[in-house]
Amino acid sequence: MAAKNDPGPSVKNKDTYEALRDDGASKEKAARIANAQANGSIDHDSRKLEDRTKDELYEEAQDIGIDGRSDMTKDELIAAIRNS
Image (cartoon, rainbow, N blue to C red; front, side, top):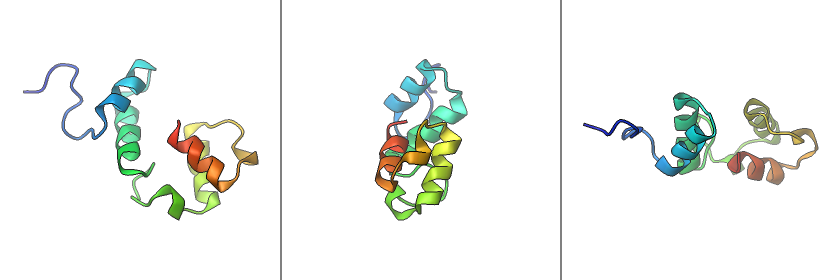
């Protein structure tokens, strides 16, 4: 049986998950972001960030709440999403 604070086997990046939970993210959001970071994508379509259009990246940055996204290039959006 998993320990009380163990997120379980479905979370691929436990360090990121714990850091997000410590920052106040919900269990679901922390797991989603940790897993996306572990596989190089940020949402459920499993495409790498580099393979997405700037508009798709902008929309993802908007969902995450990244400030200054309207002035960012595609590469800057990718970096901001990865660092969120």
